[in-house]
Length: 208
Image 1 (cartoon, rainbow, N blue to C red):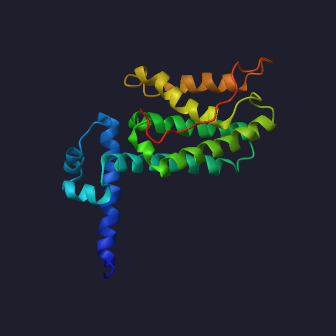
Image 2: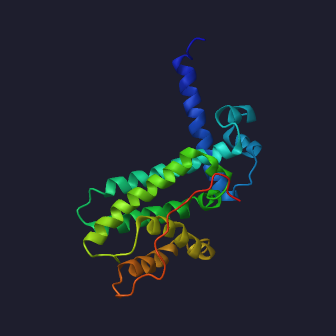
Image 3: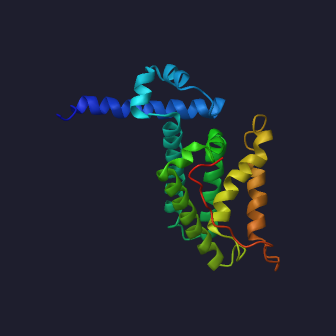
């Protein structure tokens, strides 16, 4: 079989990016129950074009998750070069919560069948690992509690968004209050250990 001509490949790349952008906006606005037909209509393409790129809705959701996770992993990785560990950790958490607030459907997608994607599960583990790199630097400096882990930090990002969610329509910046409260709790030196050991994130292949 001959290779596709460059123009055809370019069209395919553009269509894929268009579909991801439109689907991400649509899911963010309407939730993950939106039909593939509506996404195709909004993108100005046929349903067949969607299915050529993403055979199932779960494949489309997984691709959006990967884009968001890659964004956060990239932000965290870049911040490892910051010579101020506390500033770097705060900047990562700010970027993370902003991403959750911007694309609220991200939180809905977590735990759905898209987690059957090994790529998604691997990306979540990479996010926890790079978050641990940032957190470890702050721990070594004595700037955060000695028992806070990168997984704690990664999980708290969506928790902050969920806490602020009832307020966000009226006040889109309300999450900043809860981010600051969370960060203060991480940096507080009370002498009291956390009452439960750190967890290890386990992602089920077939979440209920």
